Image (cartoon, rainbow, N blue to C red; front, side, top):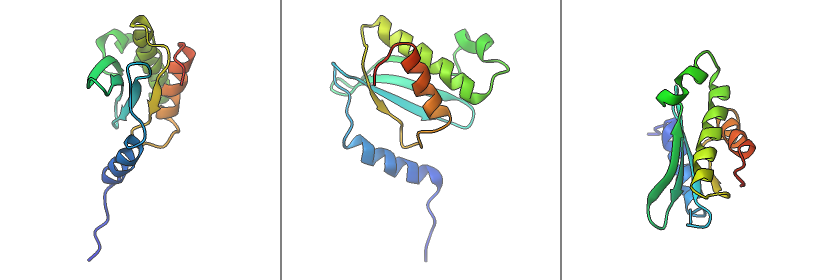
Length: 122
């Protein structure tokens, strides 16, 4: 009997396939995106140490006033700018983008665009 996989299982398989090829180093850490129905999260990760170097999300109290009344795509752009700014403060100027198995469109593309506008190179 055939059982259809749910969308998140398929996304996790796709993410694992991409992660075989992409890895964050101290020179070029990985900018990882996670997208839930309501929020979006971004982390800059050094995989050799297993450490998160910078992070931002749309749940942060510091962004609450800016995000109120905006659409999720616009919120993602602000989160991208914030994570890029925090990474730049720590001396990170270039990263490898890990879309987390999501399609590069909508909120994921908006986050990447916001990070690029803030000066992050990938």
